[in-house]
Length: 377
Image (cartoon, rainbow, N blue to C red; front, top):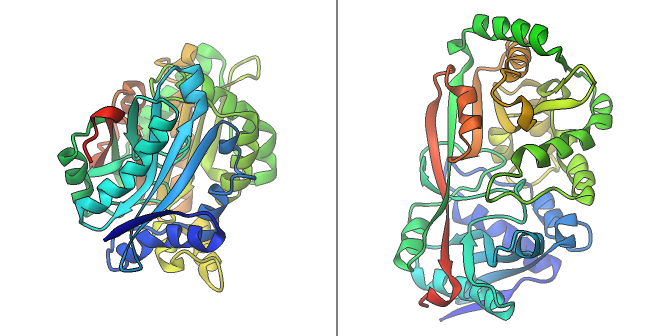
Protein backbone atom coordinates (compact mmCIF):
# COMPACT_ATOMS: atom_id res chain seq x y z
CA UNK A 1 0.00 0.00 0.00
CA UNK A 2 1.26 3.47 -0.92
CA UNK A 3 0.75 6.37 1.45
CA UNK A 4 1.65 9.99 0.74
CA UNK A 5 2.56 12.43 3.49
CA UNK A 6 3.44 16.12 3.36
CA UNK A 7 7.01 16.81 4.47
CA UNK A 8 6.84 19.71 6.91
CA UNK A 9 9.54 19.54 9.58
CA UNK A 10 13.30 19.51 9.05
CA UNK A 11 13.57 15.72 9.49
CA UNK A 12 10.94 15.09 6.82
CA UNK A 13 12.36 17.68 4.44
CA UNK A 14 15.82 16.16 4.88
CA UNK A 15 14.32 12.80 3.88
CA UNK A 16 12.82 14.58 0.87
CA UNK A 17 16.24 15.92 -0.15
CA UNK A 18 18.05 12.64 0.43
CA UNK A 19 15.66 10.36 -1.47
CA UNK A 20 17.22 10.76 -4.96
CA UNK A 21 20.65 10.35 -3.39
CA UNK A 22 19.54 6.91 -2.23
CA UNK A 23 17.69 6.12 -5.45
CA UNK A 24 20.75 6.89 -7.60
CA UNK A 25 23.42 5.89 -5.10
CA UNK A 26 25.21 3.64 -7.60
CA UNK A 27 24.57 5.76 -10.70
CA UNK A 28 27.80 7.36 -11.99
CA UNK A 29 25.91 10.14 -13.83
CA UNK A 30 23.86 11.46 -10.91
CA UNK A 31 25.14 14.64 -9.24
CA UNK A 32 23.85 15.05 -5.66
CA UNK A 33 22.97 18.53 -4.43
CA UNK A 34 24.22 19.97 -1.17
CA UNK A 35 21.65 19.01 1.45
CA UNK A 36 22.00 22.37 3.20
CA UNK A 37 21.38 24.26 -0.07
CA UNK A 38 18.24 22.29 -0.83
CA UNK A 39 16.86 22.82 2.68
CA UNK A 40 17.55 26.55 2.37
CA UNK A 41 15.62 26.64 -0.91
CA UNK A 42 12.64 24.99 0.81
CA UNK A 43 12.65 27.45 3.74
CA UNK A 44 9.43 29.38 3.26
CA UNK A 45 10.56 32.17 5.59
CA UNK A 46 13.88 32.87 3.93
CA UNK A 47 13.58 31.93 0.25
CA UNK A 48 12.06 34.96 -1.54
CA UNK A 49 10.52 32.66 -4.16
CA UNK A 50 7.77 32.18 -1.59
CA UNK A 51 6.92 35.89 -1.77
CA UNK A 52 4.90 35.04 -4.86
CA UNK A 53 4.72 31.26 -4.75
CA UNK A 54 3.46 28.48 -2.54
CA UNK A 55 4.66 24.90 -2.38
CA UNK A 56 3.90 21.65 -0.66
CA UNK A 57 6.45 18.86 -0.43
CA UNK A 58 5.26 15.26 -0.48
CA UNK A 59 6.87 11.91 0.26
CA UNK A 60 5.42 8.59 -0.88
CA UNK A 61 5.90 5.56 1.39
CA UNK A 62 5.51 1.83 1.01
CA UNK A 63 6.15 -0.39 4.03
CA UNK A 64 7.47 2.68 5.87
CA UNK A 65 10.12 3.21 3.20
CA UNK A 66 10.32 6.32 1.01
CA UNK A 67 9.62 5.41 -2.62
CA UNK A 68 8.99 8.82 -4.19
CA UNK A 69 8.82 12.58 -3.75
CA UNK A 70 7.32 15.65 -5.42
CA UNK A 71 6.93 19.38 -4.81
CA UNK A 72 3.56 20.88 -5.79
CA UNK A 73 4.10 24.55 -6.66
CA UNK A 74 2.01 27.55 -7.64
CA UNK A 75 3.87 30.59 -8.90
CA UNK A 76 1.24 33.28 -8.31
CA UNK A 77 3.20 35.81 -10.35
CA UNK A 78 2.82 33.47 -13.31
CA UNK A 79 -0.88 32.86 -12.60
CA UNK A 80 -1.93 36.45 -11.89
CA UNK A 81 0.36 38.49 -14.14
CA UNK A 82 0.83 36.14 -17.09
CA UNK A 83 -2.64 34.65 -16.75
CA UNK A 84 -1.32 31.10 -16.91
CA UNK A 85 -3.67 28.90 -14.95
CA UNK A 86 -1.03 26.36 -14.01
CA UNK A 87 0.16 24.32 -11.06
CA UNK A 88 3.80 23.27 -11.31
CA UNK A 89 5.51 20.16 -9.99
CA UNK A 90 9.21 19.72 -9.38
CA UNK A 91 11.78 17.79 -7.38
CA UNK A 92 10.05 14.72 -8.75
CA UNK A 93 11.69 11.33 -8.14
CA UNK A 94 10.16 7.86 -7.96
CA UNK A 95 10.96 4.21 -8.09
CA UNK A 96 9.82 2.46 -11.26
CA UNK A 97 6.20 2.02 -10.20
CA UNK A 98 3.56 4.07 -11.97
CA UNK A 99 1.28 3.72 -8.96
CA UNK A 100 3.75 5.78 -6.93
CA UNK A 101 3.80 8.39 -9.68
CA UNK A 102 0.00 8.46 -9.67
CA UNK A 103 -0.17 8.90 -5.91
CA UNK A 104 2.28 11.81 -5.96
CA UNK A 105 0.76 13.60 -8.95
CA UNK A 106 -2.67 13.31 -7.35
CA UNK A 107 -1.38 15.67 -4.64
CA UNK A 108 -0.29 18.13 -7.33
CA UNK A 109 -3.68 17.89 -8.97
CA UNK A 110 -5.41 18.49 -5.63
CA UNK A 111 -3.50 21.75 -5.17
CA UNK A 112 -4.41 22.83 -8.70
CA UNK A 113 -8.10 22.02 -8.26
CA UNK A 114 -8.17 23.77 -4.87
CA UNK A 115 -7.24 27.02 -6.62
CA UNK A 116 -9.28 26.36 -9.79
CA UNK A 117 -6.17 26.05 -11.96
CA UNK A 118 -6.57 24.25 -15.26
CA UNK A 119 -3.16 22.73 -16.11
CA UNK A 120 -0.22 20.90 -14.57
CA UNK A 121 3.39 21.21 -15.77
CA UNK A 122 6.69 19.75 -14.64
CA UNK A 123 9.31 18.94 -13.68
CA UNK A 124 9.95 22.64 -13.05
CA UNK A 125 11.04 24.74 -10.09
CA UNK A 126 9.78 27.94 -8.51
CA UNK A 127 11.37 30.22 -11.12
CA UNK A 128 13.54 30.32 -14.24
CA UNK A 129 16.68 30.14 -12.12
CA UNK A 130 15.74 26.71 -10.75
CA UNK A 131 16.38 23.34 -12.31
CA UNK A 132 14.03 22.29 -15.08
CA UNK A 133 12.96 19.33 -17.16
CA UNK A 134 13.08 15.55 -17.19
CA UNK A 135 15.84 13.95 -19.21
CA UNK A 136 14.66 12.37 -22.45
CA UNK A 137 18.15 11.83 -23.90
CA UNK A 138 21.60 11.76 -22.31
CA UNK A 139 21.10 9.29 -19.48
CA UNK A 140 24.74 8.23 -19.78
CA UNK A 141 26.17 11.75 -19.52
CA UNK A 142 27.37 13.27 -16.27
CA UNK A 143 24.95 15.91 -15.05
CA UNK A 144 25.80 19.33 -13.65
CA UNK A 145 25.15 21.17 -10.39
CA UNK A 146 22.18 22.94 -12.01
CA UNK A 147 20.31 19.99 -13.54
CA UNK A 148 18.17 17.13 -12.30
CA UNK A 149 18.94 13.53 -13.22
CA UNK A 150 16.26 10.92 -13.86
CA UNK A 151 15.90 7.42 -15.22
CA UNK A 152 14.06 6.86 -18.54
CA UNK A 153 10.98 5.42 -16.84
CA UNK A 154 9.95 8.86 -15.54
CA UNK A 155 9.09 9.90 -19.09
CA UNK A 156 7.32 6.59 -19.68
CA UNK A 157 5.14 7.23 -16.63
CA UNK A 158 4.24 10.74 -17.82
CA UNK A 159 3.34 9.52 -21.29
CA UNK A 160 1.25 6.61 -19.95
CA UNK A 161 -0.72 9.10 -17.88
CA UNK A 162 -1.45 11.27 -20.91
CA UNK A 163 1.05 14.09 -20.41
CA UNK A 164 2.19 15.98 -23.52
CA UNK A 165 5.44 17.80 -24.23
CA UNK A 166 5.24 21.43 -23.08
CA UNK A 167 8.81 22.77 -23.44
CA UNK A 168 12.03 21.20 -24.68
CA UNK A 169 15.59 22.07 -23.67
CA UNK A 170 18.97 21.03 -25.01
CA UNK A 171 22.44 20.75 -23.51
CA UNK A 172 25.80 20.32 -25.19
CA UNK A 173 29.57 20.34 -24.73
CA UNK A 174 32.38 21.76 -26.83
CA UNK A 175 36.11 21.34 -26.40
CA UNK A 176 38.33 24.36 -25.89
CA UNK A 177 40.95 22.87 -28.20
CA UNK A 178 38.42 22.95 -31.05
CA UNK A 179 37.82 26.69 -30.75
CA UNK A 180 39.53 28.98 -33.28
CA UNK A 181 39.91 32.29 -31.39
CA UNK A 182 40.89 34.43 -34.37
CA UNK A 183 37.31 35.08 -35.62
CA UNK A 184 36.36 35.97 -32.03
CA UNK A 185 39.19 38.47 -31.75
CA UNK A 186 38.35 40.05 -35.11
CA UNK A 187 34.68 40.28 -34.17
CA UNK A 188 35.58 41.76 -30.81
CA UNK A 189 37.58 44.62 -32.35
CA UNK A 190 34.98 45.27 -35.03
CA UNK A 191 32.09 45.51 -32.53
CA UNK A 192 34.08 47.74 -30.19
CA UNK A 193 34.78 50.21 -33.00
CA UNK A 194 31.28 50.09 -34.47
CA UNK A 195 29.25 50.45 -31.28
CA UNK A 196 31.68 51.87 -28.73
CA UNK A 197 31.11 48.96 -26.35
CA UNK A 198 33.57 47.55 -23.84
CA UNK A 199 33.83 44.62 -21.43
CA UNK A 200 34.77 44.28 -17.77
CA UNK A 201 36.68 41.41 -16.20
CA UNK A 202 37.10 40.66 -12.52
CA UNK A 203 39.41 38.90 -10.08
CA UNK A 204 37.56 39.64 -6.82
CA UNK A 205 33.97 38.74 -5.91
CA UNK A 206 33.58 42.04 -4.03
CA UNK A 207 34.21 43.97 -7.25
CA UNK A 208 31.33 42.17 -8.98
CA UNK A 209 28.64 42.92 -6.40
CA UNK A 210 27.91 46.54 -7.46
CA UNK A 211 26.89 45.26 -10.90
CA UNK A 212 24.72 42.28 -9.91
CA UNK A 213 21.43 44.20 -9.68
CA UNK A 214 22.02 45.60 -13.17
CA UNK A 215 22.70 42.08 -14.38
CA UNK A 216 19.38 40.75 -13.05
CA UNK A 217 17.52 43.74 -14.53
CA UNK A 218 19.09 42.92 -17.88
CA UNK A 219 18.23 39.24 -17.39
CA UNK A 220 14.57 40.19 -16.88
CA UNK A 221 14.63 42.44 -19.94
CA UNK A 222 16.39 40.03 -22.29
CA UNK A 223 14.24 36.98 -21.45
CA UNK A 224 10.81 38.54 -20.93
CA UNK A 225 9.53 37.60 -24.40
CA UNK A 226 10.00 33.87 -23.77
CA UNK A 227 6.67 32.28 -22.96
CA UNK A 228 7.94 30.46 -19.87
CA UNK A 229 9.69 33.44 -18.26
CA UNK A 230 8.90 34.82 -14.81
CA UNK A 231 10.84 37.91 -13.75
CA UNK A 232 13.33 37.85 -10.87
CA UNK A 233 12.13 39.99 -7.94
CA UNK A 234 14.20 42.40 -5.84
CA UNK A 235 14.36 39.98 -2.91
CA UNK A 236 15.31 37.13 -5.21
CA UNK A 237 18.24 39.19 -6.45
CA UNK A 238 19.60 39.39 -2.91
CA UNK A 239 18.96 35.69 -2.33
CA UNK A 240 20.79 34.63 -5.49
CA UNK A 241 23.69 36.93 -4.70
CA UNK A 242 24.25 35.01 -1.49
CA UNK A 243 23.44 31.59 -2.92
CA UNK A 244 25.43 31.64 -6.16
CA UNK A 245 27.87 34.51 -6.59
CA UNK A 246 30.27 33.27 -3.90
CA UNK A 247 30.43 29.87 -5.65
CA UNK A 248 31.52 31.40 -8.93
CA UNK A 249 35.12 32.18 -9.71
CA UNK A 250 34.97 35.97 -10.36
CA UNK A 251 37.12 35.48 -13.45
CA UNK A 252 34.17 33.60 -14.96
CA UNK A 253 31.74 36.54 -14.81
CA UNK A 254 31.74 38.87 -17.82
CA UNK A 255 29.86 42.12 -18.37
CA UNK A 256 29.61 44.29 -21.50
CA UNK A 257 28.70 47.99 -21.41
CA UNK A 258 27.82 50.56 -24.04
CA UNK A 259 29.36 54.01 -24.44
CA UNK A 260 26.90 55.36 -21.85
CA UNK A 261 28.16 52.80 -19.30
CA UNK A 262 24.91 50.85 -19.38
CA UNK A 263 25.17 47.07 -19.12
CA UNK A 264 24.10 45.50 -22.41
CA UNK A 265 25.28 41.91 -22.03
CA UNK A 266 26.45 39.50 -19.36
CA UNK A 267 27.50 35.91 -18.96
CA UNK A 268 27.95 33.79 -15.87
CA UNK A 269 30.02 30.64 -16.11
CA UNK A 270 30.60 28.34 -13.18
CA UNK A 271 33.46 25.96 -12.63
CA UNK A 272 32.38 22.37 -13.13
CA UNK A 273 31.30 21.14 -9.70
CA UNK A 274 29.84 17.78 -10.75
CA UNK A 275 32.72 15.54 -9.63
CA UNK A 276 33.26 17.60 -6.48
CA UNK A 277 29.59 17.26 -5.53
CA UNK A 278 29.74 13.52 -6.11
CA UNK A 279 32.68 13.33 -3.70
CA UNK A 280 30.94 15.58 -1.17
CA UNK A 281 27.80 13.39 -1.36
CA UNK A 282 25.55 16.16 -0.14
CA UNK A 283 27.66 17.33 2.78
CA UNK A 284 29.96 20.33 3.15
CA UNK A 285 31.69 18.84 6.18
CA UNK A 286 34.08 17.39 7.04
CA UNK A 287 35.64 17.32 3.55
CA UNK A 288 32.98 18.36 1.04
CA UNK A 289 33.93 22.03 1.09
CA UNK A 290 37.54 21.11 0.23
CA UNK A 291 36.40 19.31 -2.93
CA UNK A 292 34.29 22.35 -3.89
CA UNK A 293 37.10 24.82 -3.23
CA UNK A 294 39.45 22.76 -5.37
CA UNK A 295 36.90 22.70 -8.20
CA UNK A 296 36.31 26.44 -7.91
CA UNK A 297 40.02 27.06 -8.48
CA UNK A 298 41.04 24.37 -10.92
CA UNK A 299 38.12 22.51 -12.54
CA UNK A 300 38.80 21.44 -16.12
CA UNK A 301 35.14 22.12 -16.94
CA UNK A 302 33.41 25.49 -17.36
CA UNK A 303 29.61 25.46 -17.15
CA UNK A 304 27.69 28.21 -18.95
CA UNK A 305 24.89 29.10 -16.56
CA UNK A 306 23.35 32.40 -17.69
CA UNK A 307 23.78 34.62 -20.73
CA UNK A 308 21.74 37.74 -21.41
CA UNK A 309 21.85 40.39 -24.14
CA UNK A 310 19.79 43.58 -24.28
CA UNK A 311 17.17 43.21 -27.05
CA UNK A 312 18.48 46.22 -28.98
CA UNK A 313 21.97 44.67 -29.11
CA UNK A 314 20.98 41.14 -30.06
CA UNK A 315 22.35 40.01 -33.43
CA UNK A 316 24.95 42.81 -33.40
CA UNK A 317 27.91 40.67 -32.44
CA UNK A 318 28.41 41.86 -28.84
CA UNK A 319 28.84 38.25 -27.78
CA UNK A 320 32.22 38.36 -29.52
CA UNK A 321 33.46 40.38 -26.54
CA UNK A 322 32.11 37.83 -24.07
CA UNK A 323 33.44 34.84 -25.95
CA UNK A 324 36.86 36.41 -26.50
CA UNK A 325 37.18 37.22 -22.83
CA UNK A 326 36.08 33.72 -21.86
CA UNK A 327 38.50 32.14 -24.27
CA UNK A 328 41.39 34.05 -22.70
CA UNK A 329 40.18 33.04 -19.23
CA UNK A 330 39.69 29.33 -19.91
CA UNK A 331 43.06 29.07 -21.63
CA UNK A 332 44.72 30.67 -18.62
CA UNK A 333 42.80 28.39 -16.22
CA UNK A 334 43.53 25.21 -18.17
CA UNK A 335 39.85 24.48 -18.85
CA UNK A 336 39.32 21.70 -21.37
CA UNK A 337 35.52 21.47 -21.77
CA UNK A 338 32.73 24.04 -21.92
CA UNK A 339 29.26 22.82 -20.93
CA UNK A 340 25.97 24.41 -21.95
CA UNK A 341 23.26 23.98 -19.33
CA UNK A 342 19.59 23.63 -20.41
CA UNK A 343 18.62 26.15 -23.08
CA UNK A 344 15.05 26.47 -24.25
CA UNK A 345 14.80 24.96 -27.72
CA UNK A 346 12.75 27.91 -28.99
CA UNK A 347 15.44 30.42 -27.90
CA UNK A 348 17.23 30.48 -31.23
CA UNK A 349 19.21 33.65 -30.50
CA UNK A 350 21.09 31.76 -27.77
CA UNK A 351 21.74 28.73 -29.98
CA UNK A 352 23.35 30.96 -32.62
CA UNK A 353 26.08 31.83 -30.12
CA UNK A 354 27.50 28.34 -30.39
CA UNK A 355 27.28 27.62 -34.10
CA UNK A 356 31.04 27.99 -34.66
CA UNK A 357 32.15 25.96 -31.63
CA UNK A 358 31.29 22.49 -32.95
CA UNK A 359 29.16 21.55 -29.90
CA UNK A 360 28.21 17.94 -29.20
CA UNK A 361 24.61 17.43 -28.08
CA UNK A 362 24.72 15.68 -24.70
CA UNK A 363 21.19 15.89 -23.35
CA UNK A 364 17.62 16.74 -24.11
CA UNK A 365 15.01 17.35 -21.48
CA UNK A 366 11.35 18.29 -21.44
CA UNK A 367 8.64 19.59 -19.23
CA UNK A 368 5.33 17.80 -19.57
CA UNK A 369 1.83 19.17 -19.13
CA UNK A 370 -1.76 18.01 -18.93
CA UNK A 371 -5.12 19.63 -18.17
CA UNK A 372 -5.89 19.10 -14.50
CA UNK A 373 -9.26 17.55 -15.29
CA UNK A 374 -7.80 15.21 -17.93
CA UNK A 375 -5.36 13.45 -15.62
CA UNK A 376 -6.70 9.97 -15.04
CA UNK A 377 -5.42 8.54 -11.78
